[in-house]
Picture (cartoon, rainbow, N blue to C red):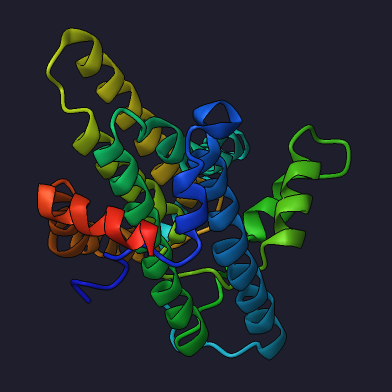
Length: 252
């Protein structure tokens, strides 16, 4: 797994040569488009296929999950996940080394997502926690249409490990890697990021979208992929040898 995604995929050649176009945001836009196409489409397809098959591998429900209060307003931090994708793509832009890391990081993030999708498909788990939502939210309630829309798009078969947890954690880790707390301003921004991330993690349970099991396995998976795969590869991407090899591949 160590080398998976460590070399640029074929389509970067054209965009790397033109990276200064589109207001120097060409790579950012292509990264976001890539994540939307080859992550979101497979996820939605497998999510709805699992809902159609109605096959459950096991039940991870704990009393913690059923007793935890449903907090409708936690929908707000829950949907902030969709700010993390452009954040990483937008902020990895200080140098060409960081741009290379940006590309490779998102390739690895995509591959790690595909492994999670395989788990969704092979070991599906239904998230049977939406009872409190149905009992507390009625037509006319402010939060009702938001949850109706979310449930229509996202069926309860996105259980473990939680991709909300996995992908937000990976983005937080790479941002902290790129921008270590070396100044007071950076320290404040780091704490703000960690607070926002913690709220997102909690929201997965308070919106009844995930079990505690999903959160724990998501954190473990995200840390494991970062510690033993992503960070070592990004360190290597920053070397002179890798940069020369990368540039050569972009010219072929």
